[in-house]
Length: 212
Image (cartoon, rainbow, N blue to C red):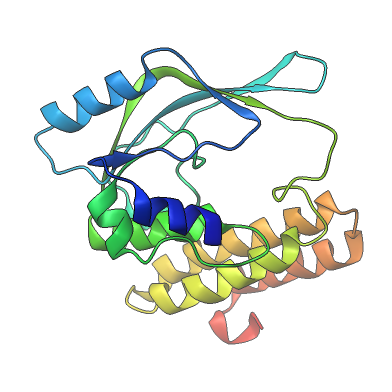
């Protein structure tokens, strides 16, 4: 978070693109995203695209894509719209958002929530713009502290969701309890994973008082 925020402060351009060391920008990514920024009838905060996920053997695992656009603030509260390297971001709004929060994982999810709270408009280039190379070494997204970051994100989202009606809050909370459960599964803690599944079902059936 510190390095990314320092880079954001030092950036000179109108738009910024963060790039993790195991990701590859595809040709014309920036060009096409800038074009979308400049031709949209909305003042976009972020322009995304699709990403090819490659495993350690060089095989394509899946294509990551979120085919949503427009006002995405509510969507982002429930699930992350894209990974950091996919996004081209309007620097002015990124600075206003306060940048990245220091946390064990889920930094980008909270970063985009804060961006879209200021200006909720997002669009995407409907093609591959990035290659993400997964490897066998430790990564933030799969490390032992992933559940801790997911819980911190949940606590922050609870504050944001307070403005919504009960049923919408339940949907948002449901998504994050499931996210925490999955985070525990990535570190093979099935007991804690089940605990959050039970909480998720409880929220769905009863009310929000039982979630913590």
